[in-house]
Image 1 (cartoon, rainbow, N blue to C red):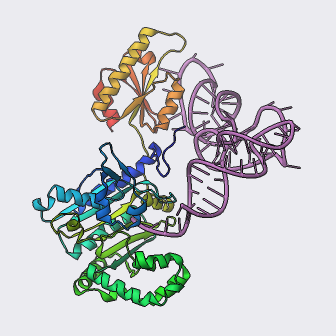
Image 2: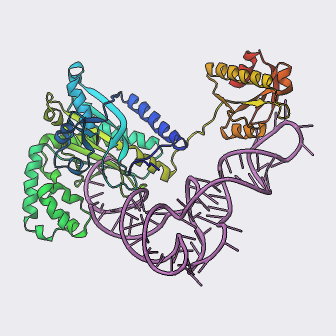
Length: 429
RNA sequence: GUGAGCGUAGCUCAGUUGGUUAGAGCACCAGGUUGUGGCCCUGGGGGUCGUGGGUUCAAUUCCCAUCGCUCACCCCA
C-alpha cells in the first residue's frame, strides 16, 4: 500500500470544518487590519532561501527539500514564506506602486525534520509582512493581529514574549561582549553550547541544560547594549501593547533562528500543546530586501503554525463549530414488489429535475445513488442532518404530488409537483 | 541526526503463560411485516494479528532484522 510521505497528513472531510473556520477568521482579521493577500509559488530557486534565511541556519543547512529539476536548476520547497514574499515584492516592484505594502499569506511550508506533536514536514502557516516602513507601530501591529486571531479562537494559556536584537552593529558588538563573558566559563558549558559558542553564540540563552542556565543567568543582556533608536522603538512597541491591553513578557533570551531579524522579535507560546509550543513568531527585518537585491526597504512580519494552533484549540476545546448539514434529502419511493422500469425512469428524471432546480436557488440537496430502501434513505438523510426530506414517488406521485417532511418535528405536507414556488417557500423558511 | 515507547478489523482497544473457526465497542450493510429517520433489537460483511527471517511438531504470541507510527532531544511555526 502506498502511504503518505512521513510527516505529511491528509486533512479529511471530518476535520475540514475547523480549517475553514480558521481560514475565515484569518481573512476577516487581515481585512480588519487592511492587509492584502499574496500567493507566491511553493517552490523557489534554492539561492533565495540560502541568501534570505541564512546559509548557517538549521533550516537552510539541514531541513530543506532541495532537488534539481530537469534543467539542472536547484529548486527548494519553501520552508517559510518571508523570503518568497520579499522576492515577489522586489520582482514585481510592489514598492514602486505603493510606499507601504501590508501583505498576508496562507499556505503549506516544508521542512525535513523528525515529526512530533505540532511538527510536520508539510505544515501550514499564515503570516503577514509589512514592507516599507520602519515604524515600530507596525511591529506592535503584527503582535496585535496574531493575538487577535488566537484570542478569537478562544485560546487562553498564551504568553506573548518580546525582545529586541538591535541593529546589526549592536548585535555584533554584543556578541563580542558575550564572548568575553563566556571565555573563561566555556569549558563548563554543555557540549551543545560549546558548539554554539562558535556558530551562534546568542542561542546559548535558549539552552535548557541546568549548567548552561546557571552560567547564562548572570550574562550581560543584549537589551542593555541597544542603540538609541532600537531602544526607543522597543519602548513604542511596549507602550502600544500596554495601550491595547495585550499582556507580554520581555524575554532577553528570545533569539530567533533566522538570520534576517533586526530590532523587534516576538513569539507567542501556548501551554496547551506539546513541546513545540511556539504558535507564532516574527520580527523586524530591515535589511532583508536589500540583501535579496532590492532597493533598501524596511520590513516586519510574522508567521504562525496552523496545525499547532488547531492542536491548541483541540486541547482547550475552544472551538464551537457549527455542525454540517444540508437543506433537503430527496427520497425515491419506488415499489419493491413490482419493478416498473417506466415508472423508475420517471422518478429518476424527477429527482434530477428537482435537485437541479433546488440547487439553482441555493438550496443544498442530495439523494440516493445506491438504490437503497426508504428506511436506509431516511437514515442517510439523518446522517447528513437534512432539514427536510422530500418523498418522490408512490401514490402521491401518481396523483401529481410530493410529500415534504420536516425532520426536526416530523410534520408532513403534500404539494403539487408543478408548484415549485410552494416547495421553495417551505424549504426556505 | 539521537533516544524512548508502540504496531491485532475503517477507528479505539481486548486477547493468546505458543496449540482447534482471533474478540468487543463504534462505524458500515441488511432486516424488525406490506411506503418514513434519529433510540432500541436481530443478523451480516470486514483481519495472511506491520513486513521478512529464525526457533519449534506448531508462532499473531518467543528471538532477530526491517519498515512505519508516536513522543522527546534538536530546531522552529
